[in-house]
Image: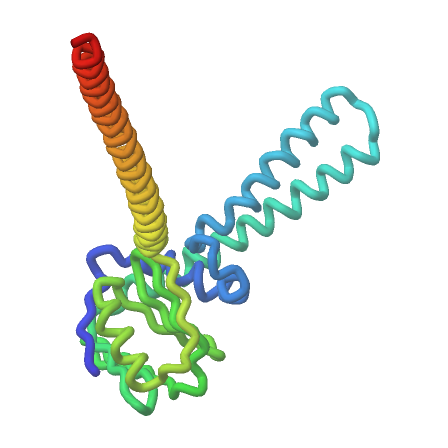
Length: 256
């Protein structure tokens, strides 16, 4: 399968995210449920450490106490500042080199592996046994490898890439970090919860209907009992009245 890509319209964002994946890929592999941080965001902890150590160093220098702690804080500040500088200068250097190259081309995925052919004629490829994983984010699709080489294209081609991977290397590790995927999972859970609630509501409604029917049957039974009692009383009254008339006639005959 051949996929045309164009990263030039937002190359800094794409490159920043890809570097965050590749340089910290072991963390990405281990923490599959954590969101992806781009390269510059991963350096935020170094910046915080530098700022905190600088403030503490100044405070202890002003109060002129604890000489050892002041020296220790000065060392921590110098070390963290140097690490922060190196961390970002490496990124800037590589980005300045890469940004002037062509970032349009064609990614070929087949049974042999992955081949990236840029529009300026540069071809870079790797066989499947060197490809480690496929990382999907909201911005890019990135193939990591056991070498320094990696491939990334914009995430709009995710369906094509997944189809190709499932066709030619279905055992490849796939880590989906897209935000909307989490939303879909939550929506699916909501749907399941709604279905369960509907079933429970249906069962409750059925139970209520049965109770209502039972109450109606009881009411009808009571009405029938009342009617039967009334009819019985009327019949009894008729019989008593007839008996009284018979006794009166007998008394008249005897008198005659």
